[in-house]
Image (cartoon, rainbow, N blue to C red; front, side, top):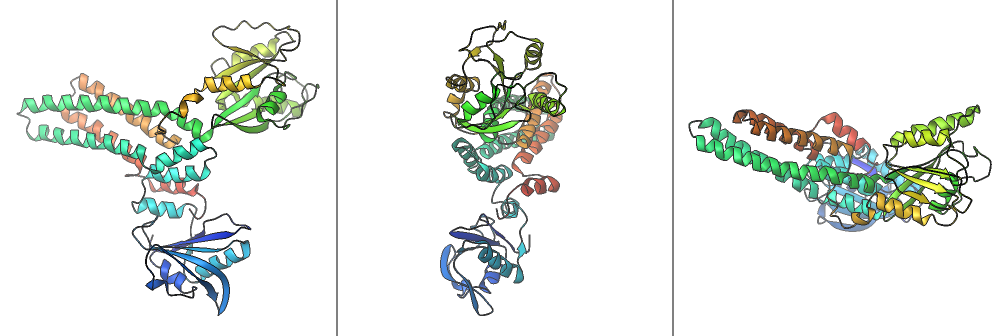
Length: 447
């Protein structure tokens, strides 16, 4: 944290502008050694025209932004050199910064410094990477919501209420002779416990929307050979991506495609037709297809309208019965030979070549995608946060049970402190160094 780091913050390649970022106590000094104007005399948060110079030779014509601590992204002095885009020029400027004493930043190290210096909490820091990786307008809004600290504010509110309770418990411990104080404290614990349970339950419930927004809906198209799975994929993504023939077993490996439905990414996989086969390659494809069942958010289970149900169809119905699925009877323009006796499930009759919009509408209804745009996007955004909130909720419910069982009030303090510790982990007030290193190692270089 005492050294000065630098990295290229824009994608390396041919472009109009490249940005090389420098952060640390010696950022201004180091850049000043290769810039033809004195940056020590300029005001903070200004952009300055000049040239990068090395051995009396102009390397590039640049604009240099100077931002002095503490009002910067990392709360350290930051310099951003806006050079002409291009691999050679950008790398040369970076090389000169390293030559003058800066160190090449690790992936995510600028944001890591922002976190360690108190500029961002851990939820806000993770949301920065979510914003960079966002592929839809909804995922962008979700990330911005995290950066603005809306979830962090809720968690801080809960922590403050718990700390307030602990102060009441301390009074009980110090003055045990006042029974009325204990009654007041227990009432307050019950009130706060109800508040926490309600808030955390809603947060966890809405986290399903957060996952959909951030990662999309992982969807597999499943069925035996020649039921029209590849045609459905091609129609959904409006592209001839999967090979379609009348020969059973044409698709031997997974074929992937993506579309957006109501602003949510649908990650679609067309699988190999499920059947018993002696063909080694096809057999591997079938096994791979079956392995995807448990990893999917949605299964589009396809049957052929002009063929009767067989044993393989029945096995697929059984394997997917506990999964979120849409049952599709394809080729409904052909004579009907299929009988499906399925209760409490909507069966979609389509022809993949004509009315695949019916399938899109069914997906919208299945995941309530129409409602997502009306939400406030205060969602958890990753499994780390969700796991910790679940743990905090379990303890909060235990606290409520202990209260009803008339556990000694000083024993309740232990649960309250543990809930606080877990919530502090969520926002990064307490953390494990290895976990922090792992989180920021997933960031891109220069951010």
